[in-house]
Structures are given as structure tokens and as C-alpha cells.
Length: 293
Image (cartoon, rainbow, N blue to C red; front, side, top):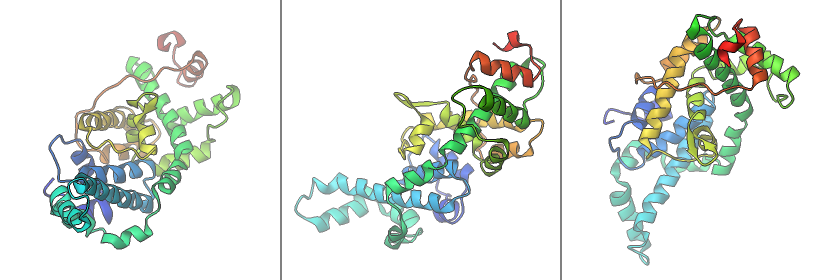
């Protein structure tokens, strides 16, 4: 962690491998580092081509950490505001936060250009439909790799998954929100680096009724849950290595591996489909229906 350069690896440029390494490391970091990195990382997962959204998320996290630091000492100095500021800066927050994060990103002037948290969440929320569609495609590919390819059948393919989605959109009520082929492929190319990471988050429960991906969209900060983050990154590595890197018809799948740290993959079982969905998948991937139900 001591070699990490926040300005160069999280603000001006973005190094998702180094950041994921820090987030999944059980060792303590200086105040606010993991919390701030997590918000930038989550914004990148949702909108990998939007550096403004990523920096906005980082700036909001910096504000939140400063508020957290001040709240730690406010009770000790209820009548001396200057004392709160000084103690918060040098004791509760610490000089590393200011030297490594606050001043390198531009200090207070950055906050003038920062959207409110609610506006930032709404901006990232615009990606939800596209990501939901991409994750459905990955779910098909995961299911095929696990239930067809692993038993000597056809390898998964992006075009095959898209065909399945097209059939569902036309024949199954409730699937009208599935995107058409051209739009889906465009989003696939844009999110190639982060599809596996988003899918890993969607597979994990965060709290009652919400997945980790839901928590990411809501702007939740779970930087202190390093075991959960390690499981998330491991699952992403599993999908990137065993599914997306082995597609018959898509070279972009390898990008997901390149953007992840070299951690041990953590296998998990594909979510089951309805009987109608399995019928369509079996027809496309030339599988015996009985073998995959």
C-alpha cells in the first residue's frame, strides 16, 4: 500500500488491479484510503468510460471521510470549533489523508465542481438497464459453461447468448426490457473490462433483499468488509477466466482478466433458469434438455 500513488493510480489515471488489491487486503490502511478508493472503483465498474463520474464519486467520498473525521472529535470540543478542525485534521483524519488524497486531487476547489451525492447516484443509475442486460447474457454464458461445455457440449458464445435473449424478448412476457442485438453488443464492448466484476457483485448478497451490485448502485460504502470484497473479486476472476475468456466468438472477453488482480478464482454455481428459458438455451447450444434441467 505504501507504494500506491493515489493521484496517478486513482485520480488522473485509473489502475483497477492495484485498487482491487488494496480493497481486498485485510491490512489496515491510513484513514479514508479504502473508503475513497471503493467509491471510485464502484463508479468505474458501473461506467468504465466515464472518468468524470469516477472522479465525482471520489470527491464525494473525500467529503464523507472528512465529515467522519470531524464527527469523531466534535463531542470532545463542543464549544471550540477551531480545536475540532485542528484535532480532526491531525489526529482523527491524519496527515496522510491530506498529503496523499485531499491535496493531490485539488483540495477544496474540487468540491465546487462536484455534484451532490443524489445527483451522482442518479447519473450512475442510468447504466442499470444496460448492465442488467449484460448480466443476463453472462448468466446464460455461465450456465452454458457449467451445464453444457463441462459435459463435452458446445462452448458458450456471445452471439448464442444474444440469440437466447432475442427469443426471450419475443416469446416470454416480462422480457420486453431486454435490449436488441446491436445495442447489447455496443454496451458489451463498452463494459468488457468490468462485466465479470459486475456479475460477481450481482451474485453476492449484501443485506436483506439486496445484492452487492444493488449496494454499489445505491452508493453504499462497504470498504471495511474485506472478506466480502475478496469473495467478490475472486468470483469476478472465476467468471473472467473460465467463462468470458473461453467464448467462441468474442476476443473482448480477455479484457476482464487483465483488469483483475492475480487472486485465486472463487467458483460459484450459475443461477437456475425457468423451464422455458432452459428450452431456448438447449435449442441454441444443441444440448440435451434433460442434461441441463
